Structures are given as structure tokens and as C-alpha cells.
Length: 244
Image (cartoon, rainbow, N blue to C red):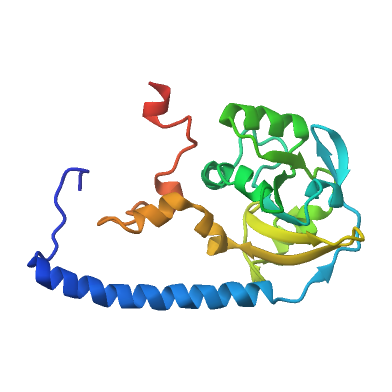
């Protein structure tokens, strides 16, 4: 179906539409209250103290995890799929990064730092970051256990044995890096705690394009072979209109 084809759909009077919309609104409010409750339970999760010292390569030199907080008490890490030698970051992670980018200034004024972490060497990260025009701090965990400990990177041996843990379950994966979000807290003494991580579809709420598409008649319209964003999303400089 082309972009201009009509969708076959019931057409009713305005009064019937308002009645149907009010019923859907009732369900939407249920979801909002459920989301509020879920958010409260997320904040109430117990924490794990980070005992290991992780070192990252940054444009300002080598830094520890605690130093990535940049003086704030909360840190969100975007685990960005970008392994050594890839040449370009994951399309899905790039899609998420486009959305996250605009939140940086607001988060930083609300006691939250935001950083991207990938296994690619820093020079490869910097080249791709500049290509994409992003400003969020992006650091390399190359040579560190960080990605492995937070279950977004996997050794070839674990992949071959089917012994990979991803999204809190054993999974069959074919690549060494996957995506996610992790949250950390740093107290006044400088202790760092891991408070939350989410993987798989758990991080799609940051993709506001999806939230808008979910309001449209065709929805996400992912009807290709993979039935996900890989059927249609491109890096923002790879769409035909971007190259014109």
C-alpha cells in the first residue's frame, strides 16, 4: 500500500466517535496510573554498590565511572552498540540517540548526567559522533569489563556456547554488542551504586518517534521481513531527503 492509499476502516458519526474515544481514554488513564505505579516501584528497587573501578577513554582523558557523573548525583548510561572496527554505530542505537540528544540540557539542569558508552576505540567514536552532529558525551570502554559486566557485550566463546545473558535471561545472540540503558547514583561520599538497567524493548520509550507513530492510523507500520525498525529506519544522514 502506498503512502497515499486509504486505509479500510469504520467511519461513524461524530457522536459515535466521541463515545469510542471516551472509552479509549478510560483505558489510557488506567495505563497512566499503572505507569506511575511502575515508576515508583522502579525507584524503590534495591541498589548494588559498584565495587570495581572502571576506566573509560574520554575526549578529556581517562576517567572513572564516578568521574562521568560530572558533579551530579545521577548518571544515565546509554549502552550504544558500536564495536571496534564497525565503522558506524548501530542504526537502532543511532535512532535512539537522535531522540535522547535533545534531553541533555534538561537532564543536566535536573541533577542527571547522560553519557554514551561503546567498546569502539575513542577515535572511531569521535568520528561517528561528529558525522551525526551529536553533543552528548560519548566514551569508550575499550579494554574494560564494563560492557560485559552490564550484559551488553559478549565474548565470541559465550556466543558460540549459547551462554549469553541478556535482558535477565539466557539468550541466543549472533553479535558481540547489544543495547540498553543503565542508571547509577553517587552519594556525597563518592560511593557509586547501580540502580537500574533495561534492555530489549525496555528502552524504546525514549524513542519519541515511536510514541508519535503509535497515535497515527498506520501505527509503526513495520511490515518488512524483520517487523521492527530495521525495516525502515536509517541513520539521519542516509535518508534520500538528507542527501538531496
